[in-house]
Image (cartoon, rainbow, N blue to C red; front, side, top):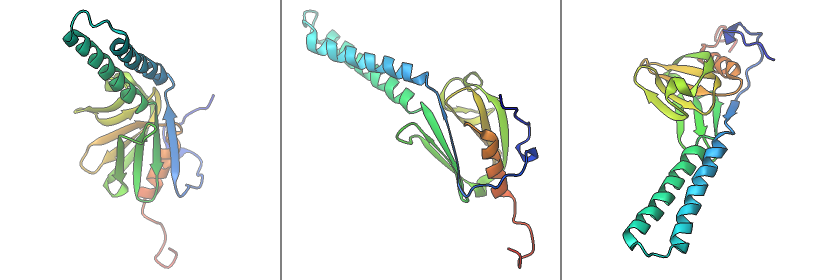
Amino acid sequence: MRDHPRDPAASPAEPTPAVWTGRATNRMQWLLALAGAAFVVLGIELAVRSSWSSGIAPLLMAVIGCVAVGLLMLYGTLAFVHVAVRVDSDAVEVRCGHLGLPRRRIPLAQVVAAEFAPSVTPRQWGGWGYRWRPEKGTAVIVRRGEGIVVTLGDGRTFTVTVDDAEAAVRAIRDRLRPPTGTPAEI
């Protein structure tokens, strides 16, 4: 088991890669996606095999309801089955799901601090997904565990769960520090 220090800056100095990437995955979301697919299949089954004896309006409402709920569940779960975080010289970019949507790009010029969060839970944010809470800020939560908290210049925060969050915080902090040395050394 890996021991997490509280401050990533206190960790041994490792060279920061030009582009840091990380991700976090929640395999349990696949079960919810399966339930969404089941609703879609139920709606199609109702449409195809119904005897239409109770009238078209109730049947149409059942079919549309099942398909709509199923599609919403599918998108809502597949969009947040994983998150990918990328830190480069310009920005912190967060992409959700297989299509990369929703996506959030935060220019490093707007970032004033980055902190390691050893334990981020869906319960703290009101569930999985893209979350906003006035007292806490915005977050992308795909699983319970470590994450990063980025503080923006206007005081807002953005939290994201990601594996190896300590390395992400180091990468962000390294890019926020002004270069050391005299102009001739740079």
